[in-house]
Length: 338
Ligand SMILES: Cc1cc2nc3c(=O)[nH]c(=O)nc-3n(C[C@H](O)[C@H](O)[C@H](O)COP(=O)(O)O)c2cc1C
Image (cartoon, rainbow, N blue to C red; front, side, top):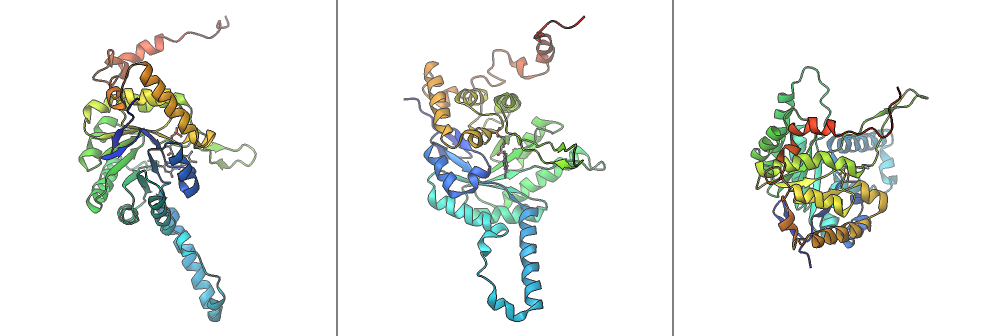
């Protein structure tokens, strides 16, 4: 039997297959289905600071308006589910998931203010989260703010949250950084136990009928795995004791095998699970086990990192030296017109 055990953020896991934040991890029923199908850990949907603040304000406004217009009406209010509003929805889900699941539960935060990041990370820890993932998703569109200043802001958040919680801390990074390896090192120095590479930026589209901006969430495919593959391959040797999670483009057991070979400790999946359902994890695990066994790997630990930048027979493949070779390798699919 192939030994699939791995460790992520210091948490021992039965396999490297983790369900990343998505609507599937937002309900107890689907969380249980993910665990039954083999998810070794789950990341809950992010608590978005602006969203929970807005919900809380709306509730406050409604109560105030009702109470001021008709003081006696408070008696007639239906019992409000305060638990489902604002941050309490996330607290309740985290506590329920912890109660019902035997696998580690990772809570995710996306804040807008330093105090918000810290407060909500503490709240999720108190609710029982085994680890916190900071979802550093922001669009740097301020023409007066330099890349260094944006990155310093992120690092401050990591430092503040690290100082405020005791559970392990992961940071989900954007691929749009000026110097990825430099920033990754500084995030680890600021206190992150693990990096999640990479967040997927959703590009809005334009509706030509309404001339409005359309939010577009398109699911990934396996080709998108190449970006995390390159960076995990490079970072594995630079950050030997940091947990590395591959996210974006893991759809099959073969995709998972590639991510492990470059040095990932775990692979995270969303699109494939949304497309095929939680049971898809069973197929991914079987394919991964089959591939490892075929190549005589007895464990995930043995396979991990064998193709990282440092160990690769062709390390240039990860870097610029490969750029020219890659361009030159293009073959037209058909004859170009004269
Ligand atoms: C509908 C949807 C909701 C998502 N919600 C979150 C979220 O709340 N927090 C987060 O960090 N990532 C979120 N993600 C991103 C996923 O966790 C994942 O990183 C991304 O989809 C890339 O992985 P994949 O290629 O396996 O889909 C979401 C993705 C989708 C499609």
